[in-house]
Amino acid sequence: MENYKKEFISFMIESGVLLFGDFITKSGRETPYFINTGNYNTGNQMKKLGKFYAAAIDENFSAEEVQVLFGPAYKGIPLTITTSIALGNESNRDISFCFNRKESKDHGERGNFIGKKLENGDKIIIVEDVLTSGISVRESISMLNKAAFIHILGLVVSVDRMERGRTQKNALKEIRDQYNIKTCAIVTLDEIIEFLHNKEINGKVYIDDEMKNKIDEYRAKYGAIDEEI
Image (cartoon, rainbow, N blue to C red; front, side):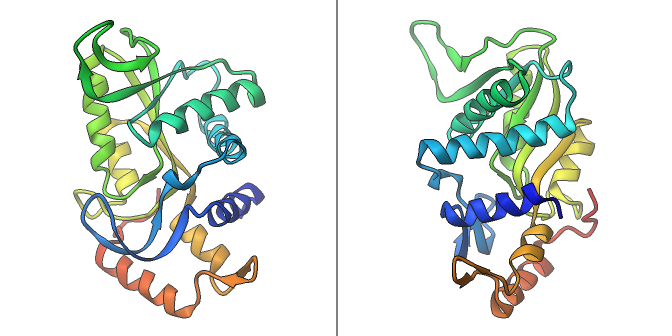
């Protein structure tokens, strides 16, 4: 496993973002682990996070491809801003960003979007926190396609939970195939388990055999049949 992936998993643990216990996802699934990017709450954390996202974009998308980063409200807003800043600082790629409001503004400039005004032909990457079933990503794609005749190049998430979406496929692969876009994650669930199973991080084991069994049971119920991306 690449070092930056190990660093990112440790970073999530130390930031209180990768959590283990009893949770419910947006799709209503009861899960033994949860990724809560809302727990990033310092400037240094956001600076580091942006670099991880920027590295994933640099690895998967050429410089001439990407024009706009889109972050869905609310968690996607800081993600897309810090990623845009990191791309400028680390790769000298000056990429615009925009994000949506939850409610339309009926005064001033009006509309649902803040930041770059979307125009026909814009090439966009969606920046999300985590993909479970793909519900929020489909909502974002529908919203973007209504704004202008844009071209959605891809989707970048922090963690691929490797769960099925509407079919038996991995939700990330399902999104890729349905919309013909490139999809990628900084790390996958397999990589998280590989790195954390029976390993101490700051004196604590987060995935012991008992927790791994719970994750395995969850994956038996919701895991993708075809998990290869």
